[in-house]
Image 1 (cartoon, chains in turn brown, blue):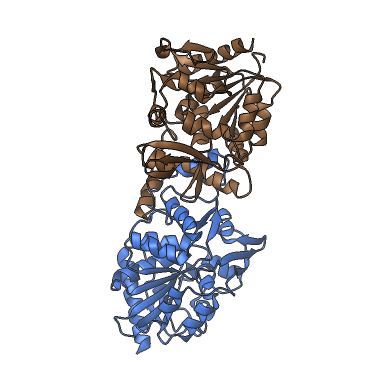
Image 2 (tube, one colour):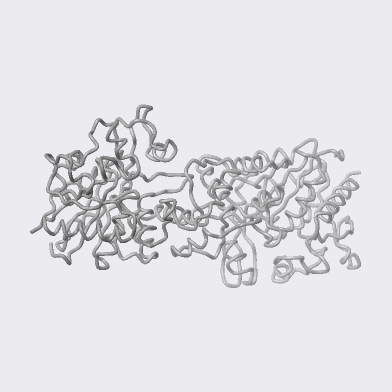
Length: 314
Length: 314
């Protein structure tokens, strides 16, 4: 629990990758382990696509596109044009540069694990954090909607989160196991804190903690577990978090976020915009600006999150 | 055997695709069937690559790169740069546009045949010729060299045909069968002629006729089988044909080409540069300019080849 200890952060999606980058920049090399959602993974055009893990890799290596918010900077789309020409599916876009990750991963998976590939890729991209898929067992997020069950990417990309969500299911999670690297990171005697990034709780964090071994390890951890709330001013910064909370009949509040992670987190970082809201059900919390526009924002928030965790540990 | 009948041409490589384009342009739509070498096919980065069939598709559809002589015009290489970044193999280049063919083919092959995919792709590219892989059974060309056995692309691309050839082997050919479409094309009652394009006999045509059912069907055909010699002025236009003939101890002559195809062809089209050479062992032949620099050259040669075949049929 020393302030030189290692930190584990759970993340998925773009908001999660932002704080992951902040943590990566403020922590000493080798001290950060990211446990990343794989519920978004799917097979597309015969390739294994891992959107959240790739987002983290591209973000930490400086390769990500800051405008588009997904994929690689300077990306080109010649492949997709040629796929369209041949009558292939074009609802999910794969950039020419990004394709290298999917093709090499798919080939690797014929003989190796997803964790093994992501560690190889992270090393090639000179990333000094451990970027770990939550599990090497396939876990697939299915969104139960008013229009029926939708595989995650069909819901998220093809349908742009339009269908009303009734529930979210993580096929394969109940029998999945954390990878050995994930278990080791959560059991590290040098652990300082566990951070839950301001990712979508339902779509990005739940598929991670739906793996029983991960949930149990976090619940049993002796170090503070702090979550950065994805709510700012009673809404979500981006993405469907608030929309889904409403569809599930949950108020879009920090109390609801705290309740969602009940038994798992020890503290909540909430935004200044929500400081005046009733906090009856809210755990120990710290109030700060959680919107991350600049790189400085990411680093400042990362420092505050770690300081908050250190205070909880005292 | 009417001059409105259908024509079957055997081809592989760049020289073959040139005459294939000439035939395609001078014949009425639907009258040309190309039986294409698949001995060059291989798995690369987990993808099924069919270089010769793709060369024919790109050539007939006008998508091929006239300068580079392989792949697509306007090609970009972002994918390959990203593969290198991730530490992947870069000895065989796959362009961003070209990748669509390999990825869609690989996916198709999980449930369907190579012939089925190539017909789908040809239709999408609005090609009115039938472009048929010789067989749907895997046939793999192995070059037996002074340095040991080399898979075709290792010999051709990685080693640039440098190792001396002692023999060429077509693994899988002896038990391979022509696809139903190939058999039907060779048995067509409307057949006018069978053309062997000026492709490399050892590397492009032999893997086709090494399939027993194809060789037998050609040998038994009632129509003229004419070959356009790849030799011009005692050398080959491009590629390793002459080099391989020398390494195999075969003189680089049209007589040797005729002997190579003995029992299979009825006539040989030879270049004006070789008209004065001794022709003792040469079959019925026709002398013309066989070098194809321009589109006009390709069409003119195609017309002369067909006229020669028609004369042999009379």
